[in-house]
Length: 468
Ligand SMILES: Nc1nc2c(ncn2[C@@H]2O[C@H](COP(=O)(O)OP(=O)(O)OP(=O)(O)O)[C@@H](O)[C@H]2O)c(=O)[nH]1
Image 1: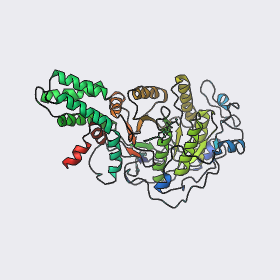
Image 2: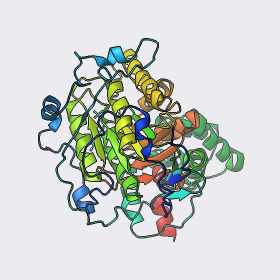
Image 3: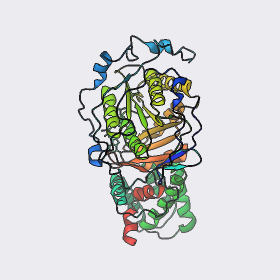
Image 4: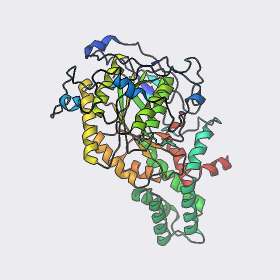
């Protein structure tokens, strides 16, 4: 394979996307290139003004060309379940036999609505620091601020921090009220500690963290009066200790070209939206991106991803409803490789209702991608909906086992979120948390900061502001 020489690290944190020598782009022939995805304005693509890029939840795109193009342009087709090239293509033992005819042939979106002017360009998001490329070979996206620090007191930051704080305000208020109830006129003793532990567990923080907090409190203040604020500060510190190690920037090793990101998670947790936001960040970093609509279970998911592709100037590879997702993934990789994409992001369905099917589907996607690159998928992101409580723990457990999740994104922290569960997840699985979603807009994906998150959960964000 001709890829693999570029060593660069993509980082969402810093500046500089140090474009490495555009390495061999000619490797296209190496694998049978089904007609290279035609497609829309790839990299040059639309750098639309932020406003234009705003996603509408269920926008009504021009009737998805899927069908038409599928019917018309699309040659044989992957899509057709009937043609189930899928099953033929993927032998039972997992060996892929991409016979030209049988090879799943995803429908490539041909002409996409001319991506708006390619000039515009106000880089999205002031908050999100641009990506970085290191000499080492990967790209780091979103400096997750492992070191909390205070280098970002820019007014803009208030935007998303305010949304995070407000999203978590209901649960943080509940927590604070309960703590006040426990400690008003009571000293720190066995009973109060037990009550506090119960409250913390109810807030989804998990037993481990709850005990850390109560242990810390009792070791210093046992038998004494203690104020609610003091309790909250200890809580904040302990939560930060748990979250600090998992707050990591997303690094993409671009020696793999394309670098494959598989996005998994239960339906509705924000996979497609997160993919769109991520694609925008990558585009802003100067990277070329292809999106593969591997959630073939819902037409709206395919359409939605197409819209995000248009908005972010990414190439889109889709197929028909019900088509084989592994075939789509295979084709998306090919398209990305042939069009010189740096990154291909593949959406997936997340039907937990049928775990066996889900497992088979994801396993097959992985197997098929590995026909292209034995190390693919290089990044497996799972989205978690912050409005979910305890269930998120089992979701991580399942997808970690089924799809080899190696990083998390928590979405919808701007709503009425219950962020406590992320603490329990961090304590239990220790998976990196790369981003949080704080809205439906293209800019609303922020590097995860342990400090900010902890402050929002325990409601000290405002206290700190006031103290300054
Ligand atoms: N408020 C808010 N809404 C979000 C966020 N992320 C996603 N959403 C919304 O959540 C809904 C579901 O998001 P999707 O991206 O479609 O989720 P999905 O996991 O791809 O869902 P399926 O397509 O059903 O598999 C959409 O209405 C999104 O706009 C977020 O960070 N904040």
